[in-house]
Length: 380
Image (cartoon, rainbow, N blue to C red; front, side, top):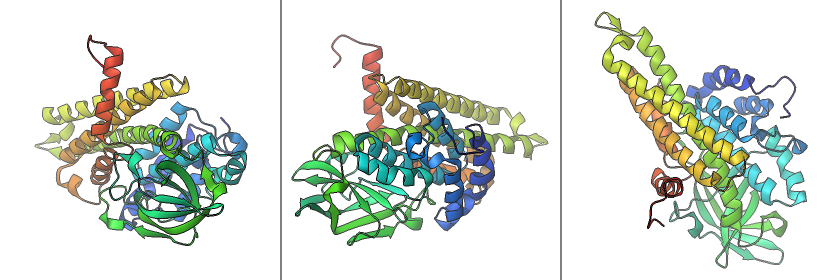
C-alpha cells in the first residue's frame, strides 16, 4: 500500500478519534462537513483509499479499507459517508472508465480536489433501482439529461455527479460536472433523520447537456455494470461503517456504565446493565467477523463475494441499530439528549438499514447463502 508521507494505516484510528471525533457533533448540528475537516481527511489519503497508486490513491486491500471505514464510522457516520461515496464513484470509473476518463478524474478524487456524488434514487424508484426514469437523449454528440434524483450524499457540494439514466430503455451512466447548465441542487438539511452532516441533496437535471465523452461504460450497461460496481463497493463500506457505529456505541455505553453510579455502585455492576453490554459486545464482534469474511471473499474474487457483502451489510446495520438502541437505554436521559453521540448514532444507524440496499432486500439475498451452504432437496 502506498501512502502519503507521514501516513500509515495504523494512524487512521488515532486520526479518527482526534480529528473526526472532535468535529462529529458540530457536523451534525451544522448540517455540513467543515471544509477544513474534508482537507484533513484528504491529507491522509483516505479519499483515494482503494484507488490505484498510479492515480495518487493508497491502493488499499479490501480488509484495510474496511477497517478504515470502521475507524472513521465509530466517531462520525457523515465523514465515513464521504469515504464511501468518493471511493465508490472512483471504483466505477476505475473499472469502466476509458484511459482518458481515469486520467481526468481519478487523481482529483484521490486527493480530494474533486468531490463525488452518486445519483440513482428517484421519486418513484428506490429498491427497484433498475427502473430509473431519468432520460438521456442523444443530440449530435451530446446527451441531454432530464430527471430528478433524491437523497444524494454530498449532492450539495459535489464536483462530479455519476448519474444513472435511460437511453430509450437502456440504463446508461454519465458523469456530469458541477456548473453544467440545468443542474440544480436542493439541500435536504434538517429534514434528514441521520447522516445530517453528509450534505445530502436532491438533484434536478433540467435538460443538462453532457458530452458523449462523459459516458461511463457501454450504453445499456449503466445499471448491470457501472452502478453494480459502485453499489457493491458502497455496501462493503457501509457494512464496515456500521461495525464502527456498533463499536462506538459499545465504547460510549461502557464508559458511561463504569462511571455513572446508581444505588451506591456503578451501573456496570448491575446485572441487567451487564446483560445489555454483553449483547452489545457479541453483536459488534459478530458484525466485524462477517465483514472480515466478506473482505476475504472479495480479495480472493470468489463467486459468492457479492452475496457475502450483502450478508455482512445486513448483519452490521442490524447490529449498529441494536447497539445504538441499547446504548441510549444505558445512558438514560443523557442518551436522549441531542448533545450526546449515542443519540446521533441511533439516528445514523437507522439510515444504514436503508441505504445501499434495505435490510429486507438483503434478507432475500441471505436466503441464497443458506441454499448454497445448506442445500435442501427442492430448494431453488
